[in-house]
Length: 228
Image (cartoon, rainbow, N blue to C red; front, side, top):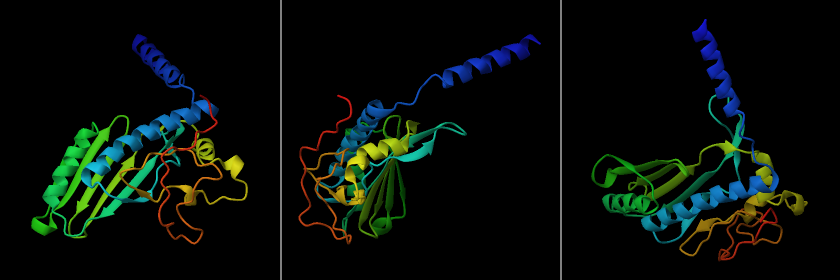
C-alpha cells in the first residue's frame, strides 16, 4: 500500500511540475519567438556561407511559425521550419561535404555525416541534432548538382497563430494578405534575418509569383512594436 501511495504522490508531483510552465503571450510570446528564430537563422547563415558563399534559394523562409505538439499528447506549441537550396553543377561531393562538416562545426553544431554511393554518384547527408536549433540536415546530391539545408526547430510553448499574426503584422495589413510576397526569396552573403514584416515592407515576389529583380537588400529590418 505504501508503494502505491508513493507512486501516486510521485505522479502528482510530475503532473504539478509539468503544469507550472505557462505559455508566453503577447509581447513575451513575440520576444521569445524572435530570440529563437534569430539564433537559428544566424547560426544557419554561417552554415550556408561556409558551404557556398553565394546566393541561395529560400524554399521556406522559416519566420512564420507552425503549430506542433509537445511530446505525446502534450500541449500545443509552435516551431519553425527553414529550407534553403543552391544549384552547384559539376560539384566535387567530397569537397562540398568537407566544407559542410566544417561549416556545421563553425556554427557550433555537432555533426554525423553519412555518405552513400561512389564517385560522381556519392551523396552526402550531414545531420546535427542541437538542443536549441533543433534538427539540422544538409543533403548534397552531386548527380543533381544540388545542395539542400533544412532545419526543424524544437516545439516550444506558445500559440503559433498568435505569434504568426504578430510576425506578419496581420492586424495592420488589412486587405493585403499575401504575406509570402514580403518574405525574402533568396539569401546571400549580405543577408540579415528578419522577424517582422509590416505593411510597407519591400516585396520580394510579385503577385503573379515572379521574383523581383534585383532582390531587395534589407540591412536594417523594421523593429516590431512588441515589448522592449
